[in-house]
Length: 234
Image 1 (tube, rainbow, N blue to C red):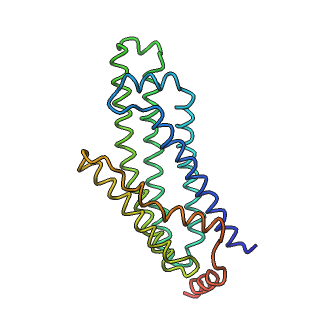
Image 2 (tube, helix red, strand yellow):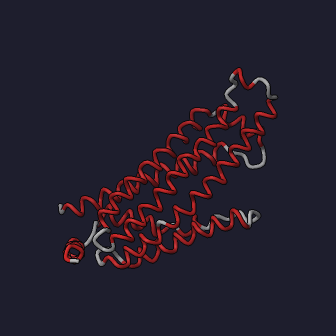
Image 3 (cartoon, helix red, strand yellow):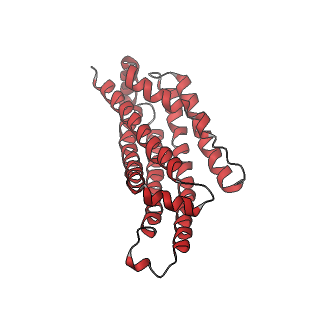
């Protein structure tokens, strides 16, 4: 197997792992434990399902870590197309990952508030529940800030796929659509909080197609080598 296809398939595999970890830590666990508008019920779920809550926390951190490696492999893949755009892609996702990883501390703070530690006895149970809810709300806002970078990195990525010649252009256009979905989510969350729709849930197809294509088909090696030679001659 050509070495660049090994790189492509590793990128696809890591992207798949990223998707699985994110689905568990960022979607399944919150949907199972969090009860919107009910601090007491949410607190009860966190305490009774502490292991699941902790597993979701770890899964999210692993997802963000894997995302760094995805970016590294994609950079190697796309650098011959346009080195500056490939670097911009990496920078944007690294900013998003850094914000998201630090933001996870807000979620963990909710667990600490409900831990029953001696230093928390100055608060009533209701106060601790409300404080935990506050940190979870801060977490949601922090993730929305990271969310925009999860969309912005798809714009240079989509451009690189379109210009590459070794991957289908349609995937690149769908990545641009996915990026718009993330940006719209950011705008709706902060400017129109009454609208609860999550647009990126309907626009993520490009990311799925990219990871599957890389994992199963790889890239057109001849076209990639042509791009690499052109880049080396500049």
